[in-house]
Length: 193
Image (cartoon, rainbow, N blue to C red; front, side):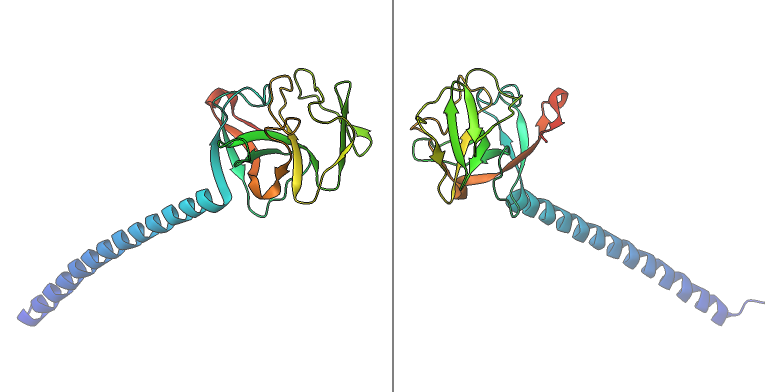
């Protein structure tokens, strides 16, 4: 038998249930927005400090990189190493970022003779190059000073790089980071190492 007090209790329970469902819905929405804002903040931090997307401009890195490729560049605790493909922010004679391959790092000795590149007395195995590796300003073995790297493009005939006075040796502080992968165009997606 129903009593007025049991109906009142049921009404209170239903009212509390509806109130709880509204609170849970508001709480869920708040948590969802909070998670979304947190995820966006993480992505912004990653793209600002750890990962960058850089456009390739020109043909100096053919066939490894094509004009208008988009590459992912990382720079977290990065120190340039021989054979890395790097993005360089600027230099004395150029204002746009450039992409080149590190051929020699500080303390190493480089020489270029008869289209052959030698680092520390060993001929480099360079299956990626196109064209001739002319000497440029290197006429005798050059020891790379501290804080510098020697870079060249893979398309040696057209590349303006450390062989020229316009580019010269690169300060390591001007190296933005290491190119890791091509992400666009989609038919050319690949890892670079």
